[in-house]
Length: 533
Image (tube, rainbow, N blue to C red; front, side, top):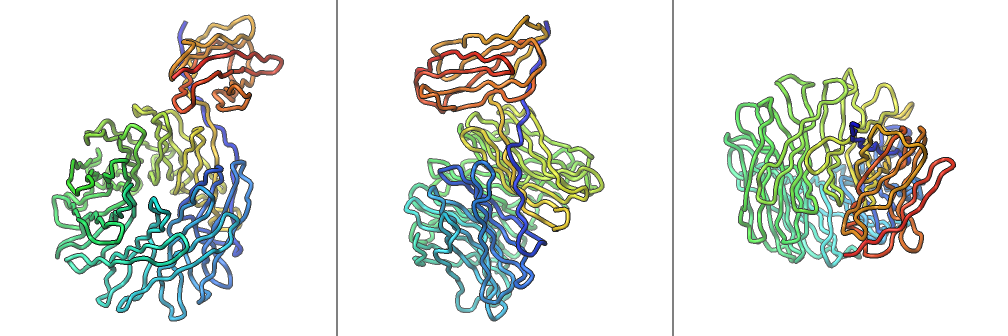
Protein backbone atom coordinates (compact mmCIF):
# COMPACT_ATOMS: atom_id res chain seq x y z
CA UNK A 1 0.00 0.00 0.00
CA UNK A 2 1.70 3.17 -1.20
CA UNK A 3 0.85 6.46 0.53
CA UNK A 4 0.57 9.67 -1.49
CA UNK A 5 0.88 13.13 -0.03
CA UNK A 6 -1.77 15.50 -1.34
CA UNK A 7 -1.12 19.17 -0.70
CA UNK A 8 -4.58 20.67 -0.84
CA UNK A 9 -4.92 23.46 -3.38
CA UNK A 10 -6.42 26.77 -2.27
CA UNK A 11 -9.96 27.65 -3.24
CA UNK A 12 -10.64 30.99 -4.90
CA UNK A 13 -13.30 32.49 -2.63
CA UNK A 14 -13.75 35.68 -4.63
CA UNK A 15 -12.19 38.05 -7.13
CA UNK A 16 -13.07 41.75 -6.97
CA UNK A 17 -11.91 44.14 -9.66
CA UNK A 18 -11.86 47.91 -9.29
CA UNK A 19 -12.15 50.11 -12.35
CA UNK A 20 -11.98 53.78 -11.47
CA UNK A 21 -14.05 56.64 -12.89
CA UNK A 22 -11.71 57.15 -15.85
CA UNK A 23 -12.20 53.61 -17.14
CA UNK A 24 -8.43 53.58 -17.62
CA UNK A 25 -5.27 53.18 -15.53
CA UNK A 26 -5.80 52.23 -11.87
CA UNK A 27 -2.62 51.56 -9.90
CA UNK A 28 -2.45 49.78 -6.54
CA UNK A 29 -0.01 50.74 -3.78
CA UNK A 30 -0.72 48.20 -1.03
CA UNK A 31 -3.52 46.88 1.17
CA UNK A 32 -4.45 46.49 4.82
CA UNK A 33 -7.10 44.93 7.06
CA UNK A 34 -9.01 45.84 10.21
CA UNK A 35 -10.06 43.85 13.27
CA UNK A 36 -13.35 42.84 11.62
CA UNK A 37 -11.58 41.21 8.68
CA UNK A 38 -12.41 43.91 6.15
CA UNK A 39 -9.84 44.50 3.42
CA UNK A 40 -8.66 47.95 2.36
CA UNK A 41 -6.90 48.60 -0.93
CA UNK A 42 -4.93 51.80 -1.49
CA UNK A 43 -3.80 53.23 -4.79
CA UNK A 44 -4.57 55.76 -7.51
CA UNK A 45 -7.19 55.92 -10.24
CA UNK A 46 -7.34 57.78 -13.51
CA UNK A 47 -9.93 60.51 -13.87
CA UNK A 48 -10.52 62.17 -17.26
CA UNK A 49 -10.77 65.61 -15.70
CA UNK A 50 -7.98 65.35 -13.12
CA UNK A 51 -5.38 62.83 -14.35
CA UNK A 52 -4.88 60.69 -11.20
CA UNK A 53 -6.66 60.82 -7.84
CA UNK A 54 -6.21 59.04 -4.53
CA UNK A 55 -8.24 55.81 -4.55
CA UNK A 56 -9.33 53.74 -1.54
CA UNK A 57 -11.53 50.63 -1.70
CA UNK A 58 -13.05 48.67 1.18
CA UNK A 59 -14.22 45.05 0.84
CA UNK A 60 -15.80 42.84 3.45
CA UNK A 61 -14.46 39.33 3.97
CA UNK A 62 -16.96 38.03 1.39
CA UNK A 63 -15.55 40.28 -1.33
CA UNK A 64 -18.41 42.77 -1.43
CA UNK A 65 -17.24 46.30 -2.15
CA UNK A 66 -18.55 48.37 0.76
CA UNK A 67 -17.31 51.67 -0.60
CA UNK A 68 -14.67 53.36 -2.69
CA UNK A 69 -13.35 56.87 -2.15
CA UNK A 70 -11.30 59.27 -4.24
CA UNK A 71 -9.48 62.49 -3.47
CA UNK A 72 -8.60 65.11 -6.07
CA UNK A 73 -6.03 67.72 -5.05
CA UNK A 74 -6.30 71.47 -5.51
CA UNK A 75 -4.59 71.57 -8.93
CA UNK A 76 -6.95 69.03 -10.48
CA UNK A 77 -3.83 67.16 -11.59
CA UNK A 78 -1.80 64.09 -10.58
CA UNK A 79 -2.35 62.87 -7.00
CA UNK A 80 -1.12 59.44 -5.91
CA UNK A 81 -1.08 57.24 -2.82
CA UNK A 82 2.24 55.48 -2.24
CA UNK A 83 1.30 53.61 0.95
CA UNK A 84 -1.55 53.20 3.41
CA UNK A 85 -2.68 51.24 6.45
CA UNK A 86 -5.91 50.52 8.33
CA UNK A 87 -6.23 50.66 12.11
CA UNK A 88 -8.27 48.03 14.02
CA UNK A 89 -11.39 50.24 13.86
CA UNK A 90 -11.21 50.53 10.08
CA UNK A 91 -9.86 54.06 9.75
CA UNK A 92 -7.41 54.43 6.87
CA UNK A 93 -4.23 56.49 6.81
CA UNK A 94 -2.47 57.16 3.51
CA UNK A 95 0.52 59.08 2.25
CA UNK A 96 1.83 60.03 -1.17
CA UNK A 97 1.69 63.31 -3.03
CA UNK A 98 -0.69 65.81 -4.53
CA UNK A 99 0.04 68.52 -7.08
CA UNK A 100 -0.31 72.08 -5.83
CA UNK A 101 -1.31 75.18 -7.79
CA UNK A 102 2.35 75.93 -8.58
CA UNK A 103 2.63 72.59 -10.33
CA UNK A 104 4.87 71.11 -7.63
CA UNK A 105 4.34 67.77 -5.95
CA UNK A 106 3.82 68.06 -2.21
CA UNK A 107 3.91 65.38 0.50
CA UNK A 108 0.30 64.67 1.39
CA UNK A 109 -1.05 62.57 4.26
CA UNK A 110 -4.73 61.89 4.94
CA UNK A 111 -7.06 60.03 7.28
CA UNK A 112 -10.36 58.49 6.13
CA UNK A 113 -12.90 57.02 8.54
CA UNK A 114 -14.33 53.50 8.34
CA UNK A 115 -17.06 54.73 5.96
CA UNK A 116 -14.59 56.32 3.54
CA UNK A 117 -15.13 59.92 4.63
CA UNK A 118 -12.11 62.23 4.65
CA UNK A 119 -11.37 63.21 8.27
CA UNK A 120 -8.26 65.28 7.69
CA UNK A 121 -5.58 65.95 5.10
CA UNK A 122 -2.17 67.51 5.68
CA UNK A 123 0.50 68.86 3.36
CA UNK A 124 4.19 69.25 4.08
CA UNK A 125 6.80 71.49 2.55
CA UNK A 126 9.83 73.29 3.92
CA UNK A 127 11.62 76.50 2.97
CA UNK A 128 14.22 75.87 0.29
CA UNK A 129 12.60 72.61 -0.82
CA UNK A 130 10.23 71.88 -3.69
CA UNK A 131 8.83 68.56 -4.90
CA UNK A 132 8.09 66.06 -2.15
CA UNK A 133 6.66 62.55 -1.96
CA UNK A 134 5.37 60.52 1.00
CA UNK A 135 6.89 57.05 0.66
CA UNK A 136 5.77 54.99 3.67
CA UNK A 137 3.46 55.34 6.65
CA UNK A 138 3.01 53.63 10.01
CA UNK A 139 1.87 54.38 13.56
CA UNK A 140 3.36 54.18 17.03
CA UNK A 141 1.92 52.67 20.21
CA UNK A 142 0.13 55.93 21.02
CA UNK A 143 -1.66 56.10 17.68
CA UNK A 144 0.55 58.84 16.25
CA UNK A 145 0.97 58.71 12.49
CA UNK A 146 4.55 58.49 11.19
CA UNK A 147 5.58 59.18 7.59
CA UNK A 148 8.85 58.99 5.73
CA UNK A 149 9.29 60.63 2.37
CA UNK A 150 11.72 62.53 0.21
CA UNK A 151 11.87 66.17 -0.74
CA UNK A 152 14.01 68.03 -3.30
CA UNK A 153 16.58 70.48 -1.97
CA UNK A 154 18.01 73.58 -3.64
CA UNK A 155 20.76 71.50 -5.27
CA UNK A 156 18.17 69.37 -7.03
CA UNK A 157 18.79 66.28 -4.90
CA UNK A 158 16.34 64.52 -2.62
CA UNK A 159 16.62 64.45 1.18
CA UNK A 160 14.78 62.19 3.63
CA UNK A 161 11.95 63.76 5.58
CA UNK A 162 10.33 62.13 8.60
CA UNK A 163 6.99 63.49 9.82
CA UNK A 164 4.89 62.84 12.88
CA UNK A 165 1.19 63.66 13.26
CA UNK A 166 -1.22 63.07 16.10
CA UNK A 167 -4.17 60.83 15.35
CA UNK A 168 -6.20 64.02 14.89
CA UNK A 169 -3.80 65.30 12.24
CA UNK A 170 -1.78 67.81 14.25
CA UNK A 171 1.84 67.93 13.10
CA UNK A 172 4.01 67.25 16.16
CA UNK A 173 7.43 67.05 14.54
CA UNK A 174 9.51 66.86 11.39
CA UNK A 175 13.16 66.25 10.59
CA UNK A 176 15.11 66.30 7.31
CA UNK A 177 18.21 64.18 6.68
CA UNK A 178 20.83 64.94 4.03
CA UNK A 179 23.57 62.34 3.62
CA UNK A 180 27.20 63.46 3.72
CA UNK A 181 27.58 62.81 -0.01
CA UNK A 182 24.98 65.47 -0.85
CA UNK A 183 23.23 63.24 -3.36
CA UNK A 184 19.84 61.59 -3.45
CA UNK A 185 18.64 60.10 -0.15
CA UNK A 186 15.58 57.94 -0.76
CA UNK A 187 13.68 56.17 2.05
CA UNK A 188 11.84 52.90 1.51
CA UNK A 189 10.27 52.15 4.89
CA UNK A 190 9.46 53.57 8.31
CA UNK A 191 8.87 51.54 11.47
CA UNK A 192 8.03 52.43 15.07
CA UNK A 193 9.32 50.19 17.87
CA UNK A 194 7.66 49.29 21.17
CA UNK A 195 9.11 52.42 22.81
CA UNK A 196 7.82 54.70 20.03
CA UNK A 197 11.27 55.23 18.55
CA UNK A 198 11.24 55.66 14.78
CA UNK A 199 13.47 53.78 12.34
CA UNK A 200 13.98 54.71 8.69
CA UNK A 201 15.48 52.43 6.05
CA UNK A 202 16.78 54.15 2.94
CA UNK A 203 19.25 54.31 0.10
CA UNK A 204 21.50 57.27 0.87
CA UNK A 205 24.44 59.08 -0.67
CA UNK A 206 26.80 58.95 2.31
CA UNK A 207 30.01 59.74 0.41
CA UNK A 208 31.24 60.77 -3.03
CA UNK A 209 30.77 57.24 -4.34
CA UNK A 210 27.50 55.37 -4.78
CA UNK A 211 24.54 55.15 -2.42
CA UNK A 212 24.66 53.04 0.75
CA UNK A 213 21.89 51.19 2.55
CA UNK A 214 21.09 53.45 5.51
CA UNK A 215 19.22 52.81 8.76
CA UNK A 216 18.35 55.88 10.85
CA UNK A 217 16.96 55.84 14.37
CA UNK A 218 15.14 58.75 15.98
CA UNK A 219 13.54 58.88 19.41
CA UNK A 220 9.84 59.62 19.82
CA UNK A 221 10.54 63.37 19.61
CA UNK A 222 12.48 62.89 16.35
CA UNK A 223 15.86 63.49 17.97
CA UNK A 224 18.68 61.63 16.20
CA UNK A 225 19.84 58.49 18.06
CA UNK A 226 22.11 56.55 15.67
CA UNK A 227 22.63 55.52 12.07
CA UNK A 228 24.18 52.52 10.30
CA UNK A 229 25.28 52.17 6.69
CA UNK A 230 26.02 49.14 4.53
CA UNK A 231 27.57 48.72 1.10
CA UNK A 232 28.96 46.07 -1.21
CA UNK A 233 32.53 45.23 -2.12
CA UNK A 234 32.60 47.79 -4.94
CA UNK A 235 31.74 51.47 -4.56
CA UNK A 236 28.49 51.90 -6.44
CA UNK A 237 24.79 52.27 -5.75
CA UNK A 238 23.39 49.89 -3.15
CA UNK A 239 19.63 49.59 -2.86
CA UNK A 240 17.51 49.31 0.30
CA UNK A 241 14.18 47.54 -0.13
CA UNK A 242 12.32 47.02 3.16
CA UNK A 243 12.50 46.35 6.90
CA UNK A 244 10.73 44.53 9.72
CA UNK A 245 10.88 44.86 13.53
CA UNK A 246 10.86 42.28 16.32
CA UNK A 247 9.51 42.50 19.87
CA UNK A 248 12.99 43.30 21.22
CA UNK A 249 13.08 46.47 19.11
CA UNK A 250 15.69 45.09 16.74
CA UNK A 251 15.30 45.95 13.07
CA UNK A 252 15.96 43.64 10.13
CA UNK A 253 16.70 45.32 6.82
CA UNK A 254 16.85 44.00 3.29
CA UNK A 255 18.19 45.27 0.04
CA UNK A 256 20.68 44.60 -2.71
CA UNK A 257 24.40 45.36 -2.59
CA UNK A 258 26.69 45.99 -5.54
CA UNK A 259 29.50 43.43 -5.63
CA UNK A 260 31.18 43.37 -9.05
CA UNK A 261 30.65 45.07 -12.38
CA UNK A 262 26.90 44.99 -12.98
CA UNK A 263 26.31 42.39 -10.24
CA UNK A 264 24.00 42.70 -7.23
CA UNK A 265 23.44 40.27 -4.34
CA UNK A 266 20.62 40.01 -1.80
CA UNK A 267 21.56 41.78 1.44
CA UNK A 268 20.13 41.34 4.94
CA UNK A 269 21.15 42.52 8.41
CA UNK A 270 19.96 42.62 12.01
CA UNK A 271 20.58 45.75 14.09
CA UNK A 272 19.64 45.75 17.77
CA UNK A 273 18.03 48.64 19.61
CA UNK A 274 21.42 50.07 20.62
CA UNK A 275 22.49 50.29 16.99
CA UNK A 276 24.85 47.32 17.07
CA UNK A 277 24.93 45.11 13.99
CA UNK A 278 24.31 41.60 15.34
CA UNK A 279 24.74 39.98 11.95
CA UNK A 280 24.63 40.68 8.26
CA UNK A 281 24.81 38.57 5.16
CA UNK A 282 24.47 38.48 1.40
CA UNK A 283 23.38 35.89 -1.13
CA UNK A 284 24.65 35.46 -4.66
CA UNK A 285 22.28 33.54 -6.92
CA UNK A 286 23.40 30.73 -9.19
CA UNK A 287 23.51 33.08 -12.18
CA UNK A 288 26.23 35.15 -10.49
CA UNK A 289 24.60 38.28 -11.85
CA UNK A 290 21.73 40.44 -10.59
CA UNK A 291 19.79 39.45 -7.47
CA UNK A 292 17.31 42.09 -6.26
CA UNK A 293 15.57 41.66 -2.90
CA UNK A 294 12.19 43.40 -2.77
CA UNK A 295 10.51 42.32 0.48
CA UNK A 296 11.27 41.01 3.96
CA UNK A 297 9.12 39.53 6.72
CA UNK A 298 9.53 37.29 9.76
CA UNK A 299 7.69 34.24 11.05
CA UNK A 300 6.44 33.49 14.56
CA UNK A 301 9.75 31.81 15.43
CA UNK A 302 11.76 34.90 14.53
CA UNK A 303 13.19 33.57 11.28
CA UNK A 304 13.56 36.08 8.46
CA UNK A 305 12.19 35.59 4.93
CA UNK A 306 13.17 37.54 1.82
CA UNK A 307 11.96 37.45 -1.76
CA UNK A 308 12.70 39.18 -5.03
CA UNK A 309 14.29 38.10 -8.29
CA UNK A 310 17.47 36.40 -9.42
CA UNK A 311 18.89 36.38 -12.94
CA UNK A 312 19.93 32.86 -13.94
CA UNK A 313 22.24 34.34 -16.58
CA UNK A 314 22.93 37.77 -18.05
CA UNK A 315 19.97 37.60 -20.42
CA UNK A 316 16.80 39.59 -19.79
CA UNK A 317 13.98 37.12 -19.26
CA UNK A 318 16.06 34.75 -17.13
CA UNK A 319 14.75 36.27 -13.88
CA UNK A 320 13.28 33.78 -11.40
CA UNK A 321 11.68 34.26 -7.98
CA UNK A 322 14.34 33.83 -5.28
CA UNK A 323 13.16 33.26 -1.70
CA UNK A 324 15.48 32.93 1.31
CA UNK A 325 14.94 31.85 4.91
CA UNK A 326 17.41 33.18 7.49
CA UNK A 327 17.64 31.89 11.07
CA UNK A 328 17.53 33.94 14.26
CA UNK A 329 21.32 33.90 14.31
CA UNK A 330 21.63 35.05 10.70
CA UNK A 331 22.41 31.71 9.09
CA UNK A 332 20.92 30.76 5.74
CA UNK A 333 18.42 27.94 6.33
CA UNK A 334 17.39 27.49 2.71
CA UNK A 335 17.05 29.20 -0.65
CA UNK A 336 14.47 28.43 -3.29
CA UNK A 337 14.33 29.46 -6.93
CA UNK A 338 11.01 29.37 -8.77
CA UNK A 339 10.94 29.32 -12.57
CA UNK A 340 7.41 29.88 -13.84
CA UNK A 341 5.29 28.61 -16.67
CA UNK A 342 7.22 29.95 -19.66
CA UNK A 343 10.84 30.07 -18.47
CA UNK A 344 10.58 33.87 -18.64
CA UNK A 345 10.58 36.78 -16.21
CA UNK A 346 9.38 35.85 -12.71
CA UNK A 347 9.67 38.06 -9.65
CA UNK A 348 8.57 38.00 -6.03
CA UNK A 349 7.25 41.33 -4.80
CA UNK A 350 5.73 40.66 -1.37
CA UNK A 351 5.63 37.80 1.13
CA UNK A 352 3.92 36.90 4.39
CA UNK A 353 3.85 33.92 6.77
CA UNK A 354 1.01 32.17 8.59
CA UNK A 355 0.87 30.94 12.18
CA UNK A 356 2.29 27.55 11.19
CA UNK A 357 5.36 29.09 9.54
CA UNK A 358 4.25 28.59 5.94
CA UNK A 359 5.43 31.26 3.52
CA UNK A 360 3.32 32.95 0.82
CA UNK A 361 5.16 34.74 -1.98
CA UNK A 362 3.24 37.01 -4.32
CA UNK A 363 4.51 38.50 -7.56
CA UNK A 364 4.38 38.06 -11.30
CA UNK A 365 5.19 35.22 -13.66
CA UNK A 366 5.64 35.23 -17.42
CA UNK A 367 3.06 32.98 -19.11
CA UNK A 368 4.78 33.51 -22.48
CA UNK A 369 5.74 36.39 -24.77
CA UNK A 370 6.44 38.59 -21.73
CA UNK A 371 2.84 38.56 -20.54
CA UNK A 372 2.95 38.60 -16.75
CA UNK A 373 0.19 37.04 -14.64
CA UNK A 374 -0.44 36.89 -10.90
CA UNK A 375 1.73 34.25 -9.23
CA UNK A 376 1.18 33.16 -5.62
CA UNK A 377 3.47 30.50 -4.13
CA UNK A 378 3.18 28.63 -0.85
CA UNK A 379 6.23 27.08 0.80
CA UNK A 380 6.20 25.15 4.05
CA UNK A 381 8.63 26.01 6.85
CA UNK A 382 11.23 23.67 5.33
CA UNK A 383 11.08 25.29 1.91
CA UNK A 384 8.96 22.67 0.16
CA UNK A 385 6.76 24.21 -2.53
CA UNK A 386 3.21 23.16 -1.58
CA UNK A 387 1.30 24.89 -4.35
CA UNK A 388 1.32 27.69 -6.89
CA UNK A 389 -1.67 29.75 -7.96
CA UNK A 390 -2.06 31.95 -11.03
CA UNK A 391 -4.55 34.55 -12.18
CA UNK A 392 -5.06 36.59 -15.34
CA UNK A 393 -8.05 38.42 -16.77
CA UNK A 394 -6.99 39.19 -20.34
CA UNK A 395 -4.94 37.19 -22.81
CA UNK A 396 -2.57 40.17 -23.24
CA UNK A 397 -1.94 40.30 -19.52
CA UNK A 398 0.47 42.59 -17.69
CA UNK A 399 -0.60 41.48 -14.24
CA UNK A 400 1.31 41.11 -10.99
CA UNK A 401 0.65 40.90 -7.27
CA UNK A 402 2.00 43.78 -5.20
CA UNK A 403 0.53 42.93 -1.77
CA UNK A 404 -0.20 39.82 0.31
CA UNK A 405 -2.14 39.44 3.58
CA UNK A 406 -2.61 36.18 5.53
CA UNK A 407 -5.12 36.07 8.40
CA UNK A 408 -5.31 33.77 11.43
CA UNK A 409 -7.44 31.28 9.48
CA UNK A 410 -4.71 31.06 6.82
CA UNK A 411 -6.96 32.80 4.30
CA UNK A 412 -4.75 34.57 1.78
CA UNK A 413 -5.60 37.92 0.21
CA UNK A 414 -3.64 39.36 -2.69
CA UNK A 415 -3.96 42.57 -4.65
CA UNK A 416 -2.21 44.00 -7.67
CA UNK A 417 -2.75 45.41 -11.12
CA UNK A 418 -4.48 43.46 -13.86
CA UNK A 419 -5.32 44.32 -17.45
CA UNK A 420 -9.07 44.69 -17.99
CA UNK A 421 -10.92 43.75 -21.14
CA UNK A 422 -11.40 47.38 -22.18
CA UNK A 423 -10.16 49.31 -19.15
CA UNK A 424 -6.34 49.17 -19.21
CA UNK A 425 -5.08 48.48 -15.68
CA UNK A 426 -7.61 47.56 -13.01
CA UNK A 427 -6.92 46.75 -9.36
CA UNK A 428 -7.72 43.06 -8.80
CA UNK A 429 -8.07 41.71 -5.26
CA UNK A 430 -8.49 37.98 -4.59
CA UNK A 431 -9.25 35.88 -1.52
CA UNK A 432 -8.04 32.29 -1.31
CA UNK A 433 -9.10 29.85 1.39
CA UNK A 434 -7.27 26.63 2.08
CA UNK A 435 -7.24 23.54 4.19
CA UNK A 436 -4.73 23.26 7.01
CA UNK A 437 -2.43 20.27 7.00
CA UNK A 438 -1.43 17.56 4.54
CA UNK A 439 -3.76 14.81 3.38
CA UNK A 440 -1.98 11.45 3.48
CA UNK A 441 -3.84 9.10 1.13
CA UNK A 442 -3.46 5.33 0.70
CA UNK A 443 -4.70 3.20 -2.18
CA UNK A 444 -6.97 1.13 0.05
CA UNK A 445 -10.60 1.78 -0.88
CA UNK A 446 -12.98 1.18 2.02
CA UNK A 447 -16.41 -0.37 1.57
CA UNK A 448 -18.12 2.75 2.89
CA UNK A 449 -17.56 6.13 4.49
CA UNK A 450 -16.12 6.47 7.99
CA UNK A 451 -14.57 8.99 10.38
CA UNK A 452 -11.92 7.85 12.86
CA UNK A 453 -11.55 9.09 16.41
CA UNK A 454 -8.72 11.59 16.53
CA UNK A 455 -5.42 10.67 18.16
CA UNK A 456 -3.98 11.62 20.52
CA UNK A 457 -7.07 12.68 22.45
CA UNK A 458 -6.80 14.81 24.58
CA UNK A 459 -4.10 16.63 22.59
CA UNK A 460 -1.82 19.68 22.67
CA UNK A 461 -1.43 21.33 20.24
CA UNK A 462 -1.77 18.90 17.30
CA UNK A 463 -3.91 15.85 16.64
CA UNK A 464 -4.39 13.44 13.74
CA UNK A 465 -7.73 13.03 11.98
CA UNK A 466 -8.50 10.08 9.72
CA UNK A 467 -11.37 9.22 7.41
CA UNK A 468 -12.23 6.98 4.49
CA UNK A 469 -14.43 7.42 1.42
CA UNK A 470 -15.60 4.76 -0.99
CA UNK A 471 -16.55 6.99 -3.94
CA UNK A 472 -15.23 10.03 -5.78
CA UNK A 473 -16.95 13.04 -4.28
CA UNK A 474 -16.76 16.48 -2.69
CA UNK A 475 -15.65 16.18 0.93
CA UNK A 476 -15.78 18.77 3.70
CA UNK A 477 -14.07 18.33 7.07
CA UNK A 478 -14.77 21.13 9.55
CA UNK A 479 -13.89 21.94 13.16
CA UNK A 480 -16.40 23.50 15.57
CA UNK A 481 -15.99 24.83 19.10
CA UNK A 482 -18.21 23.82 22.03
CA UNK A 483 -20.81 26.42 21.00
CA UNK A 484 -21.08 24.94 17.53
CA UNK A 485 -19.27 27.83 15.88
CA UNK A 486 -17.13 26.82 12.90
CA UNK A 487 -13.47 27.61 13.64
CA UNK A 488 -11.59 25.81 10.86
CA UNK A 489 -12.12 24.12 7.50
CA UNK A 490 -9.55 21.36 6.98
CA UNK A 491 -10.86 19.81 3.77
CA UNK A 492 -13.13 21.39 1.18
CA UNK A 493 -12.50 19.69 -2.17
CA UNK A 494 -13.18 16.74 -4.42
CA UNK A 495 -11.31 13.59 -3.32
CA UNK A 496 -10.76 10.19 -4.90
CA UNK A 497 -11.79 6.98 -3.08
CA UNK A 498 -9.30 5.99 -0.38
CA UNK A 499 -8.28 6.49 3.22
CA UNK A 500 -6.92 9.81 4.42
CA UNK A 501 -5.09 11.22 7.40
CA UNK A 502 -4.20 14.79 8.23
CA UNK A 503 -2.97 16.80 11.20
CA UNK A 504 -4.75 19.73 12.81
CA UNK A 505 -2.53 22.21 14.64
CA UNK A 506 -4.60 24.00 17.28
CA UNK A 507 -1.80 26.14 18.69
CA UNK A 508 -3.83 29.30 18.09
CA UNK A 509 -6.99 28.00 19.78
CA UNK A 510 -7.92 27.92 23.50
CA UNK A 511 -8.35 24.76 25.55
CA UNK A 512 -11.77 23.16 25.42
CA UNK A 513 -14.10 20.74 23.71
CA UNK A 514 -14.11 20.69 19.91
CA UNK A 515 -16.13 18.76 17.36
CA UNK A 516 -15.06 17.67 13.91
CA UNK A 517 -17.47 16.68 11.17
CA UNK A 518 -17.07 15.06 7.78
CA UNK A 519 -19.74 15.88 5.23
CA UNK A 520 -20.33 14.36 1.81
CA UNK A 521 -23.40 13.76 -0.30
CA UNK A 522 -25.56 11.42 1.73
CA UNK A 523 -23.08 11.08 4.62
CA UNK A 524 -22.25 13.08 7.73
CA UNK A 525 -20.51 12.07 10.94
CA UNK A 526 -19.31 14.09 13.93
CA UNK A 527 -16.89 13.24 16.75
CA UNK A 528 -15.67 15.01 19.88
CA UNK A 529 -12.09 15.86 20.86
CA UNK A 530 -10.40 17.68 23.75
CA UNK A 531 -7.68 20.33 23.53
CA UNK A 532 -5.87 20.68 26.87
CA UNK A 533 -3.04 23.21 27.22
